[in-house]
Image (tube, rainbow, N blue to C red; front, side, top):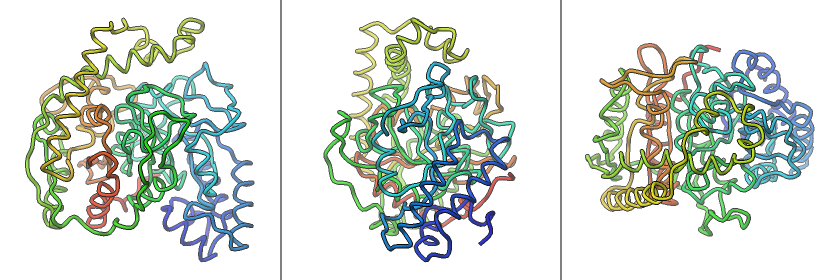
Length: 469
């Protein structure tokens, strides 16, 4: 196979080629490095490309696979990591100037699990500075561009991870999600992003934005790939107090079981009230497809969404100010303009923080009660498509608000409740920009979320479309 044919593959397809020895891990890695060299100057998905490390990893994987020593489906698979994931001996910047030369001594748990499974590290991916934003317009490492339209954002904060998958610059990536930062890039880049249950994947060694809201998870080309990635990185970790000792499911075992008989709740209040042209139509067509596949769709309401979403902004600010206290005290001018301005806001007082925690708990209870009568929830992932780079506000669905406020509208509530949620492509606007569908499940029931997402994905062809890069 030629180099162009070997890049932009799904994990499942690449693993099959490696298993059949049609290609080697070294050939596969060389193809991705060549594509990165050719396309990333215009995409800017990577902060650091680890070419020599990748080739060393690939040679080792090639020798092991040739000797019949398979470590599983990720053995020899080229991946990228958001530059919040600490990697031994490789700088981990967090997207910030203050940590531009930070060289960790050890790998974070999620990275170590990938490397133990034989994954090949292509490099560290661009992010909104310290994950505190939705554009990945990074003032220190440059803006990441959406492969569907280079004048537009790839979402954030895991914009490099989403753009890399859309442009075929990695087979799979990891991102982080505090208010939607895995699902938003997936939505506007036309790929798949999975936020697992809070506590399902270790965040030990991942630079934090919020201890209470951060999640780690994969961004991939397909739902099957997300299932493969989650199966490797999930599990209890004594180094992360938020992880829970619950069994890790075989996510492939039920992936093809379909949606017939599943009850899907559609909370139209709040989530469907304001949508950009083309978004609502695509999501409604997705609902029709699921009904045709045998799902039972019913309308529902989640009370307390507005209150909790507003409260979480203040709670996240309080945590971020504590996390960056030293940088704010010693190097305040080294933060970019937007993140520096946010971190400089007046900190919430104790009463406001406690009220935010109560609002979060109230929304968690309300969501649990709703999900007693449905198996899954369905919403748009983002009510808007990718904004232009540098655009601060957006008018859509009869309102005008900040791009930040619009982008997190449908995703942030499920960070507050900690339940699993996935975004996958469900259509395109008349301008050719991707629209994302969000499916939400019960705690630690990623298997059902993946199953429903896979059924929809396989009934459509949106995931097969490629950006013009």
